[in-house]
Image (tube, helix red, strand yellow):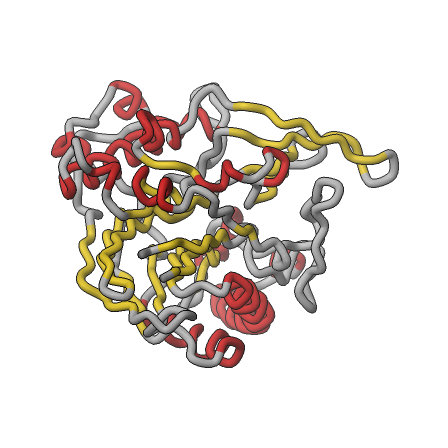
Length: 370
């Protein structure tokens, strides 16, 4: 009995328009920045037209990427609400995959933009085993103080002890697959952001992601018992906005690119994998071929890295010791630089920067659940 599990940051699956760019240039779309817009009313009209036109291409590519995972259960990040998820699944994905994902769940988390984690599930696996929803538990309300995780580093970042730990949520989903229980923890950790306090964006926000990882581990240990949790069947799925390795890119298209694998000294992922608690199964792939995200701030700062994770409990990982996850990269924009031998045929109409399925790649794995 097998289950195909996937995770994907679909990037701003919104059911509403964002007009904040009229007053905040950082939020203004680059297309509208080209034009002299005289009033907020005019801006809103143009933003609606731009968003609708662009979203149709984008969501077709997003749906192609999800269809390519062949997932029975897919964990998602940056979903506006259940209505947006239903409209996307019916209007785009259903037309590509037939039976579709009839079971959909999300809840309001802590993100200031209102984009949350969600899950979609088929009624049964590709092998015909029923997938049954048992319950959903949000942990969005947990504070640093409640879990004893407030530190001087967090204080220096302006985070008070009574504030909530998760930037979005740690959404706990219990299901059964052919009667076998499985628990999923859907997460989307704090983004790296811009440099601050003399530190780069990743270093400056690291204390928050470490606290989120510590909180996830504690939630699991409290659920299953600290001495037995690692042996139970669970997986942590989502965008953790951090990496243990990256592939630095130098050179250019004319003289050739050069790629170098660099290990990081610190990562929030280490909190979760410490002591064999769980395994980052993407690390079963070759070092140069683990990336799910291309980052660039110009020629001097370019790298490929893994931001998207399926972390299997020790027990589930051991049961699936030979399973190698897939990373679906066909929806990447043309600007993404691929190492030699990794190039893929992009989906139809993928652009240099957009449209695209997402800057993130779906990660999928087939698990033995017997």
